[in-house]
Length: 311
Image (cartoon, one colour):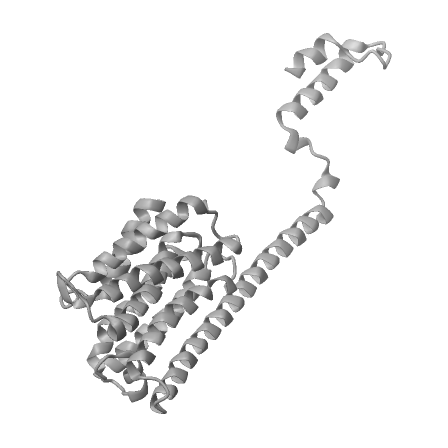
């Protein structure tokens, strides 16, 4: 586009030389070539060592900064995972010690572990970094517990304190059922949903808090049994609904206050109530002998939460 303009409209500021026809051609050729092939006519000084060195230094600095950031995030998340793991072990040991001293019942100790393990694990998620890899570091915590349960459940080694604090009857093979499903659910929820989704948060809150208190209160005050399941009581089912709703609401508010979720609370309360009701109904059904509650309850909760909240 500029080539014909250069031909038709020569510069008016500089006087035309006497032999102007002989001088126009090189000037026009230079202008047109600069338009068509600008990199080829770039002055040599602009491609010198100083420019190349500056670009290289900036590139190296950016790469080094990015690498240092990744290392810092990995160290942060690794430290957080170690801290949460140590906290989980300390919780089990402390409650087992109380049970040994007969300060609390063994069954109550087991259910407190059931409630607090999931709630505390979920509450620890914000201490991990904002990196996309943070959820994998968090999932290491239940993964280590999974390995420990397999280790003891298969009788590769034994630890009476751990076995008694987690199982109902003190048998190692029990570790391969409910407790194993429990930690697998923790790992699955952190990997798939993480802290930005209400689905995983509610499923863990209902499984930990709702199911835990259903067993605690149902065993103590559940004299009136359900008409369709004599192993479950009205008190247990109502406790399942109430504490599932309470713990879910608390954890959703917790993550909302920290900025991970944005929820319309007028509709959220109704949605959480529906999910807790679905989980309580599933827990009350006479199928626990065939399928463990630590499978049916979180699966039902996830499905119900997906329907009311969406992914």
